[in-house]
Image (cartoon, rainbow, N blue to C red):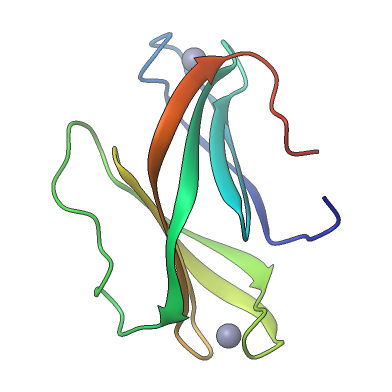
Length: 120
Ligand SMILES: [Zn+2]
Ligand SMILES: [Zn+2]
């Protein structure tokens, strides 16, 4: 997979192993994943929408554990600018939003597994 979009880490307590560890966050158009660097517990999200949206339109609902409100630099495939994106990850949802044009990738939870991350 050659596309580079979101690749970042967020250090927090893992829902699975209970240790504070880097959670490796990767997203490309067809898929998004969060993988614990300690126990390899992975959550996979699949795309549901991709469109220009108002901020907050795709905020996940209050869910079973903390919602991560993150920020990272990423290339936007809509406006072509590499700049700040908001990344919001909840129990059932994963969304990214370009701060420049508002282009939003919204993914929903698909599955979880323990193992190696298939996104290189
Ligand atoms: Zn873990
Ligand atoms: Zn954009």
